Length: 267
Length: 333
Image 1 (cartoon, each protein chain N blue to C red):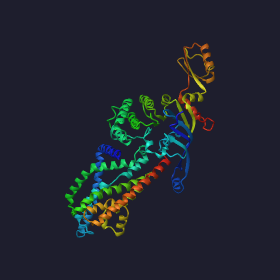
Image 2: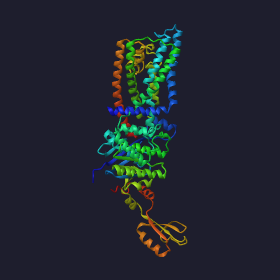
Image 3: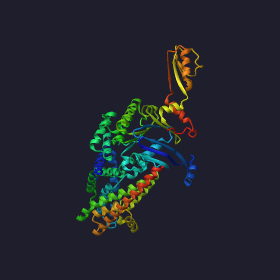
Image 4: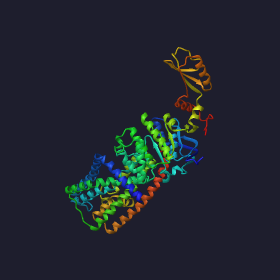
């Protein structure tokens, strides 16, 4: 355990040093992460204003609150591991990793967390700045604000495990781009990135709740905005726990099978 | 004989490679029915390595050298055969096994590109769970042997190829592996750097008693480091034994160099004249006749100087590859 902790500390340092080499691309990447929710925010506020400032229980100020929180939640839970793995397998970068006496997932977790820690303050400042422009309406529910932090952390874990397992498709095909594209489209609809799930048709809401998508992004947002009852919040935490268990199992099985394929075909 | 560190018996690796003709029609056809061909990269090889041996693993491109090294280090799963390294089954990649081996491949890097090598070394320290004292000591030794001091704090991408290779080798050896697989460690390096790296490998082997299996296209590497060589071609072993025995066995000729006053004498009666410049003649003679020809040359001509040499090792190796693997030239040792 101590050794693992030491590994994380060292990996943080390494990732941090690497990131500092790429300040410009980091900023550009962050701009993309800001722009997307802002575009949806503008679209939905316009729609709300056009229909008497009310769409499915959301006023334009509610939309502002929703998408500004989405920006933060999406930033915290986002991973780029699917691109990364494709690159690793294609460029043979996986071979040295396989020969290290440590599971490669630790490297990716640490790398992800470091990047989030570095960029989160900037992201929060941006959200505050945008808040001054778009005037969000926050309903303050103290217990929900407290519950938001663990729900966000768990959402990150769920999303990380799901995306890490999906990324391993790179072991079987060198063209995982199509799969990634499909996943991102599903993500857009089912995780609440394009619109709050409560605005979606019932069958989409059911699908989003049955699959991991809702628990990766929408759930922490709904919680923080005080749109959930305590019972709904508990169900959400339960769903996150289940998906973490499923995700861990998936990572284990897919990784083993993937490495077996990789070492049969040629490393 | 101590029990072998590396043991291979009748090891096979067959790849299934999909292939198709060029062109759109063939591309469409391959959508429905994919033609695959079996390639026997390694076709039944056997050998043992004793602790502390440095063995040269030679063969032309595509002979199966890298495939074998990958099976030995645990990256590839053998199709058939027995394989044990330090008593472990490599492809299971148990941590205790991985902590005792290393694989250095010329082009693959384990150094993080954008940060100084020292930071990558630190990462390896925690990955391999080295105690700070052991790490410090090994790092100091490696720094001295490879003259790394001025390189450690520069971002890896700012290093020259040779400098980077030295750092790669150091990163691969920080955990003091007992078994070292080197795939073309000197490729792309200048002569000085090659010599230094070679000296280092010999020193590492001497100091830590590590077993080393190396492939190289530079015969100088092999001559300097390896008493024993294993020659592989088309996935099969053509020769396994002492380097000197290899030369003995595959050379039917010797080279006699005579220094004469000029090139006016007709030397064709003594052997095949390879060249003659400024009175310095190079003759190729059958091995069995060397003594007789030398005697005759000394008796007949005003010889100033005379040397008898084996042909260059490159030439010998080339000759080995010309033999068919099935022609009875099977493993020697």
